[in-house]
Length: 292
Image 1 (cartoon, one colour):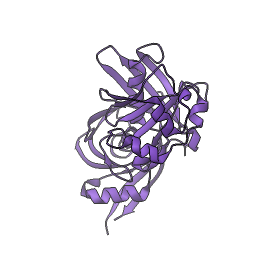
Image 2 (cartoon, one colour):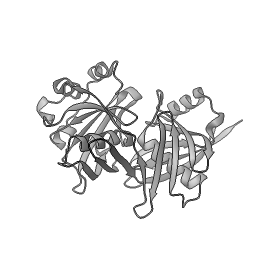
Image 3 (cartoon, helix red, strand yellow):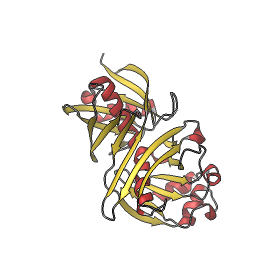
């Protein structure tokens, strides 16, 4: 009988049992693709990560599986995995790690003063602009709930998302995704998730409220999404959402599903290059052995 060590953490947490849960499996190089996919399906978190090798000190190969499939990159799994590596596999004073994914390497840094892990995002790509009325129908919203000053657009920093600017928190609360229309919208489209964002928030210290819907990945609504917030950061500075090409903001997510998450987002755009970092706190919840 073979077993493998794993940890469960809460990522982007505002306290224990908030944020987005993640299971991280260590020394997973002996697992087959089928094993990893089955484990992720049984755990049924939005994503599960597997550390498949440590190439050199501070650099690790990592794979990410949703309950339905492997994905090339995702945000909260990156920070959660980096936290487990720092706590379990490296010295706790490690200031920088590099996680290697199919989408490429992702540097992680640690801010000791704020107890926040930061990940650097890749240069974004901006895709198709979508029809606002069509997307409003998918979300069961009136078209007036979508902010006409900014486009509904596909953006990617590794994992593409459809970004939808809303006029109010009331609009965000009113969303009721029509699954049939949602799956029709994402058919033959790289972006499978829809992230909406509102300038009105539950907490006065936060600058945006966001919700992320990703039923394609087996997650009707995600509690916290680092990759999608990286896409959002690029969008915000490109279109000067806050009237400037630089931001340092706090983004709340998961309030509507009882998993209050907080993401720290920094970004700037000089007209040619983007500099994007997404950060948050991580809480250790449990450790265990998975019997294979």
